[in-house]
Image (cartoon, rainbow, N blue to C red; front, side, top):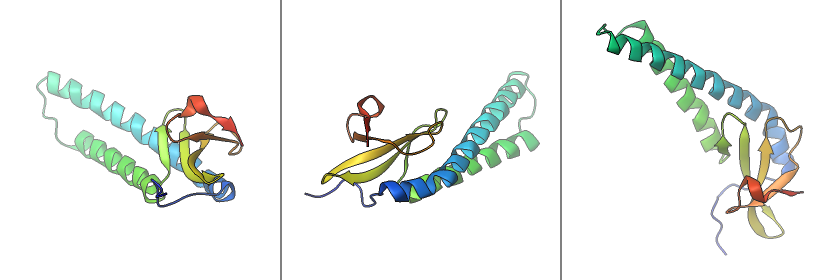
Amino acid sequence: MPHRFDKHYTREEARELLPQVRQWLAELNRYRDDVARYEKRLSGLAESGSDIGGETVNNWIRALAGMQATLAEFQHRSIFIKDVMRGLVDFPAIIGGREVFLCWEQDEDDIEFWHDLETGFSGREKL
């Protein structure tokens, strides 16, 4: 039976990536906050009829580019972000011959849960 994903992680492989994943999630949240802050400034400038070019636009574009680069790190490794703010991440895996996700949330110390591809967080089961 063909698999949906090309890359599958063992629990150990996913564990080894957790320090980097934590760093990327922190970066994404910083960029998200920056984008929101710059968009608010740009909106205020537009409403006042001011020129919206310059440093604020450049910073907004840099934040968007940083976010895109960080998201590409996840995509390149076939790691799926389910919720950036919660730090909810899925790693494709094979358990018992079935394709599933190893499921991890940033406040958890280790990867201890999995779920079927269709069930999501609510279907998490202990490894």
